[in-house]
Length: 179
Image (cartoon, rainbow, N blue to C red):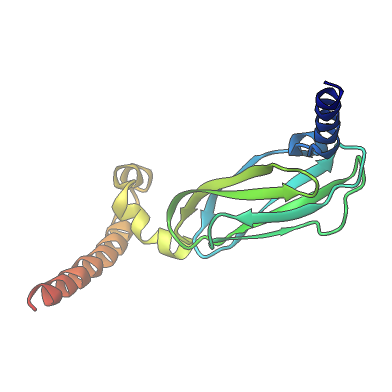
């Protein structure tokens, strides 16, 4: 009976000694989701997460890994003293147009769990590319009343930009369709 009681006490004590900390107990990330808003295509855009050590011991970021190849991460490699702040920098490579939401997993030394942080936003065409299709695509009705005096200039610009765009896909579509 004494052996059984001793075993239970020993198991309880060793479990308590080797228990790992949770990341929420040692680190506070100021904002876990950063909305980059509208960003230009082909313009890598960074988001910086502030990481504050809320524990009593030095904090070390072991890794901050993006979940895809379109995001590059960097982070404070040195230990962060209690009460001090480090960073995690996530740079999104804005190649594809449209909405995006990318996650990074963060691992702190001495913690058995991982923290997830997120960057999100919308990739839009560059000003040069957006200037041509914008009048032809959506705000045609809004553009005409606002610029009544410049209607011939707008019409010429719109028709010259729209006509080649329609002709080029028609030729390309006709050629591949025949073979």
